[in-house]
Length: 194
Image (tube, rainbow, N blue to C red; front, side, top):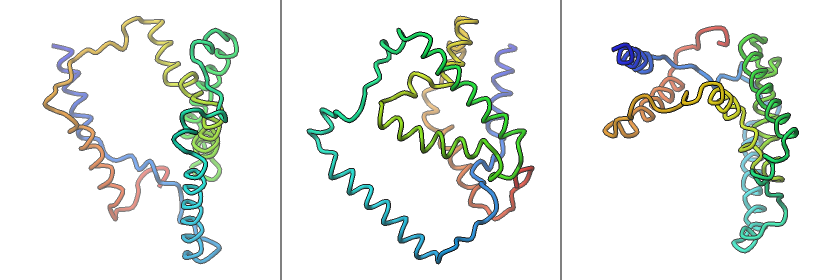
């Protein structure tokens, strides 16, 4: 009975949650150049990058790509100390990003979490992955945390309830609809970051 009550409470909280306004980066920034120049340059950079990739990547080249180093998961597991250090650093970076996001300055230009996520992780780690292979599969901080919890408490992540097939993609559709509807609304943002 307690499990059912907790499940119902979790479902009610999930369906009644408000929007998080997670993509609010700060105040409006006025460009130092006319917008048409910015839009043209951004579009040209995008088109040229696709042309360069299209020129260098062919079906034969993709089959045997010598410019990357494949990271073999089993061989990396044998590396031991290096892998453990990299995993510990990834968890530390995740926790540091979360804590500075919550406790750091409200100004996104002065907060470490915004810079670390967008510049170091989203941009820099993407290029690193393109150069050496899928390193994230080895040092994914969420996987490291879940593996640690599973070692301490075996069976912690086994399913407690069976997902009803009749729901299909409805929960994902609902959350997408709610977030897109709330980000397009005219009401001003609330809270510390708004």
